[in-house]
Image (cartoon, rainbow, N blue to C red; front, side, top):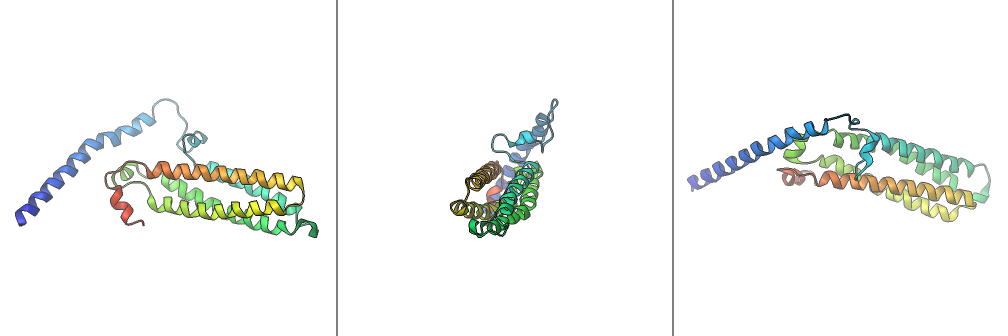
Length: 199
C-alpha cells in the first residue's frame, strides 16, 4: 500500500517537474516578444484595446464623470424647489464614485503588475478581481439611481447631461468587465487550486 502511494507521488512529482520545465521557456520568452521595437509603456492608453483597461484611464474617466455630475448637482441646488431636490442625490453619487475611483485604479494596477511567472503557476490575482466585481455592483446601483433621477429632472439640459453620464459609466463598466474576464481566462497550472482559497 505504501509503495503504491510512493509510486504515485513520484509520478506526480515527475509530471509537475516536466510541465514546469516545458512551460518555463514559454514564460521567460514572452517578455522578449513584448519588449521588441519601439512600443509604448505597459500602462499606456493603447492598453484599452481588446478588453484591456489601465488605471490611469479609469481615474481620468471617472474624474470627468464626477466633474460633470457635480455641475448638474450645482445647477439643481440653487435653493429652488422646482428641481425635486435631485441636486443633493446627484452630488452623493458623484462623491461616492470619486472615492471609489482610486480604490478601483489600485486594484487594476495590482492585477496588471502581477508577476507573470506567479500568474502562470497559480493564476491571476483573484482577490483583486473579486474586489473589482464587488465594485461593479455598487456602480450598477449608482447607474440605476441616475436613471431614476433622469425621470425627476425638470429640464431637457439636465436630462441630456444625466443620460450622457450614465452612458459614460456604463461604458466604463463594460471595460472593467472585459478586463476581469480577460484576466480570469489566463492559463495557469494550478489556478484551480488558488481559486479554492479565494471563494
